[in-house]
Length: 279
Image (tube, rainbow, N blue to C red; front, side, top):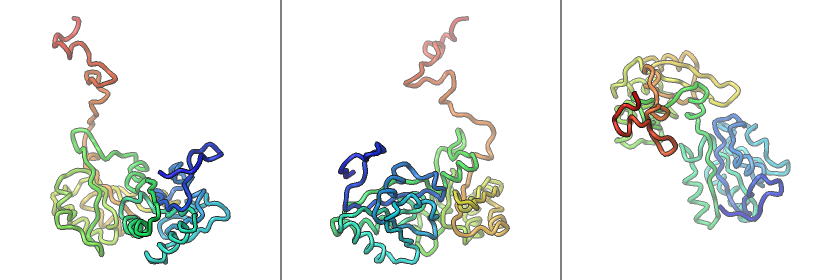
């Protein structure tokens, strides 16, 4: 990461000049910003954020003299022009993305345009909505003896999905799933899960506007999620967590079992020599 000096406040390095940062804003709660994200936003000359997905409170830590622009009505070319202008004039730009920049965003396209002009850019990760929803509900994606995998996917919409990645194909694994960008077609989501053989009683958490003041969590099932979505009025900014582990009985990780050895804890003598220990 390019660095010019240490922050005089002792809070760590500050970005070099002429640099664009793609900053993960998390799902909406300003307190879920990482320290690095807050520092970048707080030192940037330009803060460019999508107001349709990122609440203004997230960028409230910007400098009083910073240029703060809502990119929601802008095109890719218009946002690039703002980033380019700032970087080429020696400034620092913070392009603030909802959730984590690596998921369902346009970072790749924006970075390609910047790299073509020799403009340096970096990415700061953020908390994606699925993880914030799991935390809010107190659930786990991985459950011993049930599932040890998480699939992050979406229904096909205006953005095509490869045939091998159609939701019903991925759901056949029976593992936990986080389904984004699909609240506009809950009946189709329900049909895809059923076609994959997912039991109708499988627990599903519908998490709407996670991290925002009007956050709403609704428990439903794979066979009842469409009715739940319609009843709750959920639309945009909803993620669905398909959680087969929530229907399991009491299972526990072996990590803390007394007879489980690892690099920081030796196994009991009985496990080592088969004698059963002292009698």
